[in-house]
Image (cartoon, rainbow, N blue to C red; front, side, top):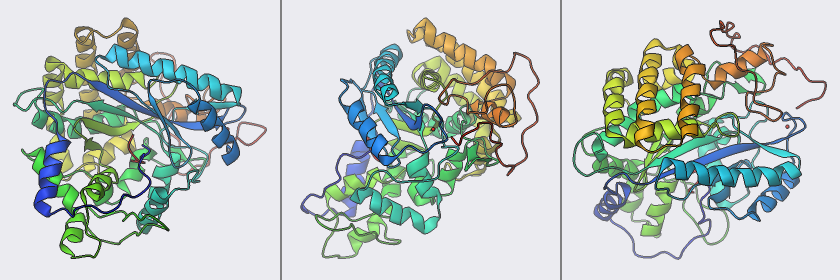
Length: 469
């Protein structure tokens, strides 16, 4: 989520509202047969010896420098809090995408391990509060803007991590793989993906009462910045209006701090007659400062999935999402399964609606979400062989279904079990020193810890392509 253009360009020709709408319509949905797939995997960086210990900025800087020396096919970037992200190149198949990113992750992990550090798959850091590592004009302006609505913005920037799946927009024509259907499906199925892969129930050493605290943080950021547009039959028009009516995060400058206007939409900036009217470059930059759960960038970027436990946990959400969108039969099954969920949104855009909040708070303890998730996993498992997925990928999806979906659980439940003193050492599932202990098949899950109960210390020492974008 790191944006490469931190400097300003000299102002060019100002854009009009009509030009903005035409530009956004032209670039946001590039239709055609779904052929390409990508993934962006973000990771927290923790101390191997004790993940509750903060990693010093000097150690982070040295580790990032070492990681940049490794030959990679994926793009490596650093997030504001020091999180590390790998963004795959577009792949022709799921198996190709998994193979590329797995090899790159192995290489990066080996370098970090030599420095006593580990990549950890958690949607929100359980121990560290927001601490900004990158000091750049973009992030200074972002922090100033987001601070106006509370602390959630800093947490999003510095203590969160995700798995982002990138899919082709789909056909221009209607049908299971049409771009209108895929846009709608992404926003309804997105809530199911939040529930199935919730993996961030703890912040500041305490359970937050939400299985996906990362998703909670997004709902605490204003809808103009972190929400999607209303869903209708014209995704291009809806997104263009959303871009025009979204607040401007910052106005870039060649020198000194960037301006952070309050309550100024891009449309108002155009109409203001400002001595510095917005240009095409300002429009391009403005779009990178919008963080909806589904972002159209020519392709569709699904941004709602928490980072997953274990070295290879990210493969399952990638595989399930690809199968449900790119296989016509699975896409139709998923569409029919999630259609009744739309009533629970009450017509409000994601993620600021009741369906998405329920998914983030209780996950698959919600009976309707659990039933839909089970149906969708079944459809994905049938579709993966048709998509040519390697046997190991299909096996991983099947194992995830049996361990979590079939039992109404998610990775966040493993972490909460550990905090209650279940077998293990009290570390989050997927943290350094192992990936936790899975409950025995059929075992009765322990009752959840009361909200706000302090996390018990079980260690003799305290614990270790685009923008936050």
